[in-house]
Amino acid sequence: MGKKVIVFLFLLCSLPILLSLDPATYDSSYHAKYESPEGILFLSYSKNWNEPQLEDLYKELIKNKHAEEINLLQEVRVMAGLSPSNSMITGIYHPFISSITLYKGNEYTSASEYRDTLSHEYGHHFGYYYFPTHHFPFSKWAKLRGLDDMPVHWNAFLNYSISAHEWYPQEIFADDYVLLYGVTNEVDRDDVYTNEAFYKRIQHENQKLENVLGNKELQQFIEQETGIKIDHDRKLETPELSMVTDNSLTFTVEKKKDVAYRLNLADDELYEITDDQSGLITFSNIDLLENAVVSLDVLDLNTSIGYMTDKIRLHLEDLIEN
Image (cartoon, rainbow, N blue to C red; front, side):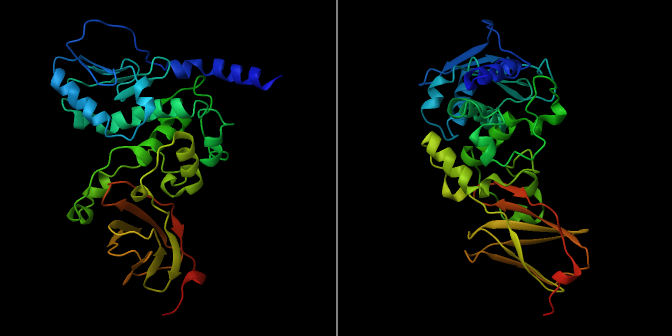
């Protein structure tokens, strides 16, 4: 069987995914309309959304890094109520008609409330434009993303479940886009110590995957294929434990200022914010026991982007006397 036939069969089998479980159909009964300079139609099917609000939604959309692919986005709809397929869904992208549908328009009445959803759904548009085979296991993106040995659901068309949302390759790619190209915000330092900043950080839905912010090979591939540079200030290497004493832990981290790290140790939480580019952080004056388990929450204060590291179990032989 030739490669073209195999690819055709894959495309045929994935048709239900691409059409989505919630297809958009033409409906002329909208309450308001705004057309962007690129020709994107923003349509409101909620009485709570008027033309100026739709224009604000457009302004929110173009904050996401983009290039020529934005000219192929046809439509963004704001629907009054819930998604008919699942009440948890806030937005959906329809790849065959290049359209984004946003739900809960009677509840969300400002463009900023759709910021994260809009970035994620545009990530689908971006993905299908530049990497049309990314939802297949043989794609180069999947290989560089390290998905070979992960429980990714490549057969979503046979067994779709919202509970497995984080394991669909399309969703992984869309969240990668959010982290690499999406809208960012600055974080107040005071919110770090109350944990508010960590709760509100922009992070990948699937925290079991490798940290895409530190995957240089993947980033270079995406830049090469799209011609769109990833801002250097988004990149965040995964911390590595470099030294252990009986009362301190030292990690090698991104050489970057204004990155907050929260050490999670049993019932304790300790905080450090980098004030220089030394590439090291140390948590001191802590009681470390054999087999203690620690993890780090990471947050860039200049972008609000971050993630949680894998858990690390400390062993007796790791302890070094001061």
